[in-house]
Structure formats: C-alpha cells, structure tokens
Amino acid sequence: MTHLTNSFAALADPVRFAIVDRLLREGELSAGQIGAGFEISGPAVSQHLALLHQTGLVKRRRQAQRRIYSVHPAGLQAISDWINEARKFWEASLDRLEHALQQEKET
Image: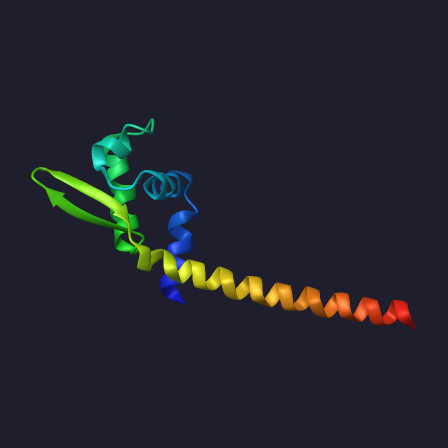
C-alpha cells in the first residue's frame, strides 16, 4: 500500500502528472524534450523525473549523454488495479441500491 500511496503522491503534483501523461501519449522522450514543455528550470525537471523514477512510475535509460524516459507499466499497474477494485465496489453498491429501490417501488 505504501508504494501505491507514493505513486498517488507523486502524481498529485501537476508537473509530474503532466510528464507521465505526455510519456503515455508520446512514448520515450529525453529529459531535454520533456523539459521543453514546461516553464521551469532544467534542474527542476530533473528533480521531478528523479522522483517519478524513484516511485517506479517511469523508467530511464542512458543513450550516450542523454537520459531517455518512458512510462514503467508495472508502476501504473498498481494504480490501475486499485481503480478497478474501487470501480467494482461502487458498481456492486449501486446495483444493490438499484435492487433495493426496485423492491421498494414494487411494494
């Protein structure tokens, strides 16, 4: 659960969320390409990328002098699993409510 909490905390920051969203849409990008999309300093972008890497949401690899980032599917899988469980809970709850209201209506 701590990993999931850390993932949500990392994505709570608008810049980090935007980075992950962009990587999801565009695929692998260098740190410089990522930084070009924001009005923050290069070191600030690097700090955001380091935290996303630390939480397991993004992967990085070296390509000569550049660092290339991409979404780490396993990092997002825990979030996806949690969302699916929450959705199942609410769907079941709403189904029970609908059934109860239907029974009340029939009496």
